[in-house]
Image (tube, rainbow, N blue to C red; front, side):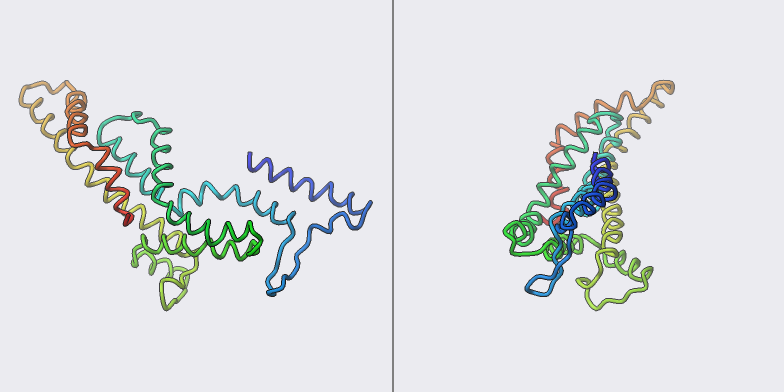
Length: 249
């Protein structure tokens, strides 16, 4: 849908706009780039709308790779595999849980973005470029707090960049370093979740082999025991709380 809207906007600019300009030279006066009182560039509303429509295509990637979503959805998927449940909870449920838990964890960051960037921009106190720069600061601060120094140094070395402090790292280097750290952390948490369920599988498999019931799948017998263990220890509460606390909440 976003790509369709972007194509329609491009069609208007490429085909309709030239004819309108030929009929009325002032028709495209709204498509301008000017300089405001502070000396910064200020884009017209038409260009801002076009930039916003283009940015819509990147919002899913930004939500997944620049927030806590990646760690949460990977841990939830590993937990489902550890329990031996292939489709329960469903993918929609897992993604929904990860999405709303992401909103909960990222709420302080989003509040800062709203106060420092969005509201001043809506009140015409900041230009679009200034608002974007202000919005980047809390996001970069969050990502830096969750990124390992080793991963950051690796991507700085690949990019052949040198910085004095982590705050000077460009966002193009910070994002892949952050994603790498999130993947490692998610797999570490997933490993810890897998251990107790793996022990149950091994015990059940050993008992079945000792009884000579080698044709019976151990997964069928161990599944109710794993579910019972997960419910008795209040597993969902532990997993959700551990994921939230892993971000320093």
